[in-house]
Length: 128
Image (tube, rainbow, N blue to C red; front, side):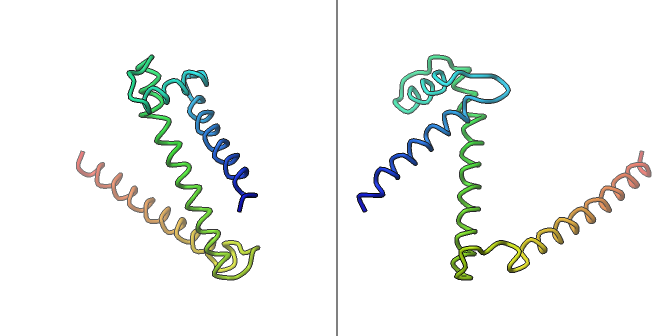
C-alpha cells in the first residue's frame, strides 16, 4: 500500500501539470505562469490580475479540458469493463462487434441525413 503512494502523488502532479499546459495552448498564446496565476487567484477568491486571460481560461479552455478528461475516463472505464466481462486483458471492441455496430450506425446516420438534406433543398426551391 505504501509503495503506491509515491506513484499516486506523481500521477496527481502529472495531471495538474497537463491541465496547466493544456490551458496555456490555444489560439491566443498565454504564458504558463499567467495560467497558473489566474487559476490560483480564482481558487483563493482573489480578484484576477488580468480579467481577459481569466475569462479565456475559465470560459473557453477549462471546460474543454474537463470534457476531455471525462471522455478519456469514460473510454478507460468502458475498456476496463470490456476486459472484466470477457476476463481477457487483451479484449478489444472487435470482440463483440462493437466497432461493426458503430460503423453501421454511422452509415445509417449519413444516409438519413443526406436524404433529409435533399428534401430540405427540394422544398426550399419549391417555396422560394
